[in-house]
Image (cartoon, rainbow, N blue to C red; front, side):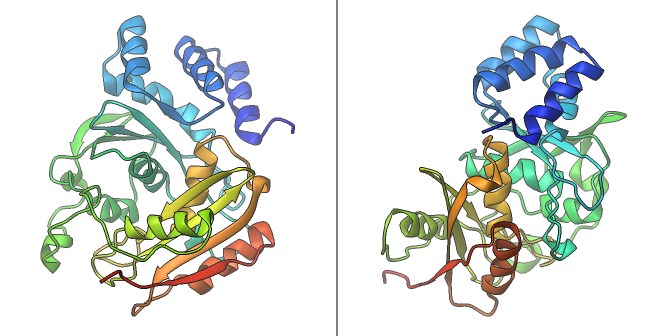
Length: 300
């Protein structure tokens, strides 16, 4: 298999601007097969080597994160870094899908946050992004269990609380939701089927759907590995994040290519909304695959 487009862009980034921090970060990514994440130990090592604060280092990483973007529609690259409670860095970038509705797109902040969530972080303390968050992303971030203290950092302006971008916000508290995104959530759904089907069901059990009860998860067979995605809901509804987008974003940030996907299973609880048709549309246009659909039942 030849180099994927992320690797090509990272090499071009170094050729265009041989930044010493970027050289070290990209070498770390190469050593871990281009998984878009830096663990706390590597973060601290880089900070000490280059005498940077944690936010300064994350800002240096933004052009690298942006190399993970897929932008056939806008041709506009956005990179983001979510800093986890653990001290790990989780890269994110905007993801667009040609030949399907523009609403299927993933914003960079969603990308980085869902990356941290799937990696089992307990919370995100900071979001670092190379452009000011749009209203869609501000509302999305308002669902986090750290939204009251979440700091947003831009190249031109650091240490801004989320609520300075979203004053008088409407969010989960207005709808009496106490368990927020990143808080432990577990639905008890009956396991069935083979390993891939069970992975989709387990992903659904960890999804966040406090408004519609439409818990859903997806599992992708990627060669001999399984990548999952979970539904993330929002009090304003529209910034809600679909399970296939969650999985595709994670797939890319784990260093895989779309052409390695050979099977897709969507598992969801019957509710007032369903992700079956919109998921089928994107799976068909991206992979020419039919999804396997599982309707979930609770164990009690």
